Length: 110
Image (tube, rainbow, N blue to C red; front, top):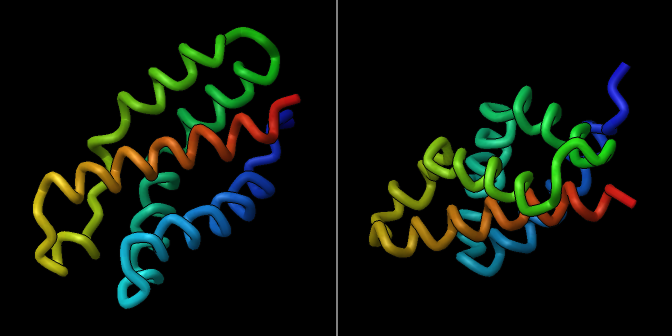
């Protein structure tokens, strides 16, 4: 049995991704949320394992952040590429996405 409630994390993350996506552009908000959730699903096993290790104290917050950031390249951000945004702007959104994932997890850890 998992000790980290991944479904609750996903619910919270969807809200936070909505806010983040709205800052980039409301015209592609839904696509950005979809891209963000796709990143989470690609990293789900690692994310769940690392979140549980963070919860139990096996991982420090710094180690957890480093591990999540190491997965940043898995965020493909199709919506931003289709919109023709510069790679630097896409990279900034990826960084914001990773920070949002980290923040969503750490908010759930007492």
